[in-house]
Image (cartoon, rainbow, N blue to C red; front, side, top):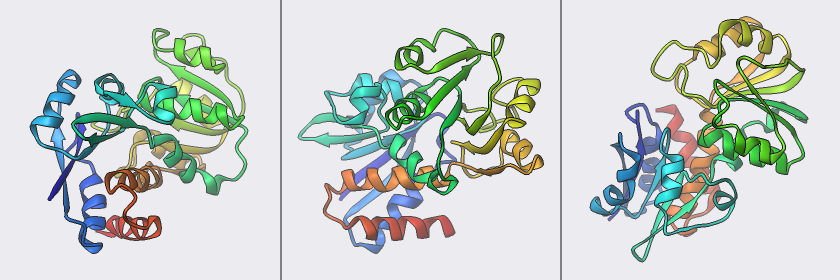
Length: 263
């Protein structure tokens, strides 16, 4: 039996085991998927192989550490330096990124998006910003401090810190920070969030499974919004294809992964 896992800190909330095990069970694929709480991202590679994993997903805050741990990085992950899916290929750790395509799948229903503001500058933000720029979407990034903004400036994004932020009009605002995951924090000071929400059409939060304070404020202003569940599904389908080496039909993976959200 193949063993897969998700690494993160925190990780107890993750729906990934339900999603992937639903696929394995219904399609009779001989595999099992579990959670691994990892506090030190530098231990990712040794932990992966010590557990005898065939593959894994990686969530906050270890996506950049996962990139560094890989023997080889392929596709979009190579461009952004961020890995959320790992494959054991003959004893080598191969890294991929399915976050960005998963998110593009999630925001399709919002229609044409021309201007996006990303809150946060971590691994998820990097993947999304790079993909948005590929699609020709004007992308701005707002982060607490300037240290992590260099990557986004090189991409051509408009970059701001909390102290120098200049408001504009956005089609979509995306929270990629962990604010609201384990607490009741907002991804930026209240006054900034108020101003931002008053100047956007849609809102998305990468966090799923709870209405974060950020989403609560958006709903209070009657803004159409969604949590990270659709993004999770989109990236999960792509990751599962890699886990099973494309031996299962994408339509079947999506069907049974979707059913797991009813549990």
